Length: 181
Image 1 (cartoon, rainbow, N blue to C red):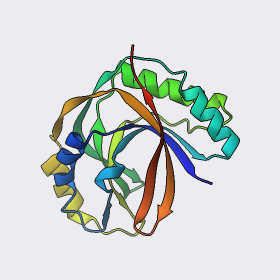
Image 2 (cartoon, helix red, strand yellow):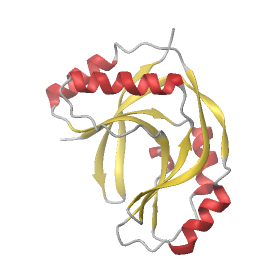
Image 3 (tube, rainbow, N blue to C red):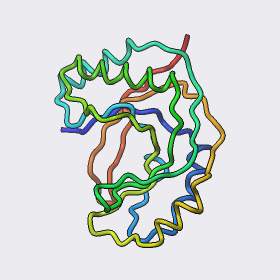
């Protein structure tokens, strides 16, 4: 049974700008460029009928394309242990609106959606619970804290599946939904 999530794909030109950030931190498991995205809603393991309902209901979301900007980097931690290194995505009314719509659709399809605060980001790296990051992480944050990428226009969002592979997760775009008005 696949794990599903809904996300904004990151355009190749933006992914190309993020790639040089992926160095200098030992024990980091760097995310492949083709897996860069901005998660709107994580659905988890979903069975066939629910997946079909979700696919269909997401197609009812209508909205205009909007601008998305990356500004800075941060780490998400569990206690003192870093878990994830991310490029921060600036919040906007349109991004928040789309995230809320997608989450509502998922809930209406019977999917239990996390209720934590939406923190839009692009995951750059993950860390194991015993990762040794030390001063390297502090150096990374200091060196890249002011990183900015030119904005891009989000003209679609997509439903992805995630399966475990030998070298990490394999994401597959199942359905793409245009943002047009």
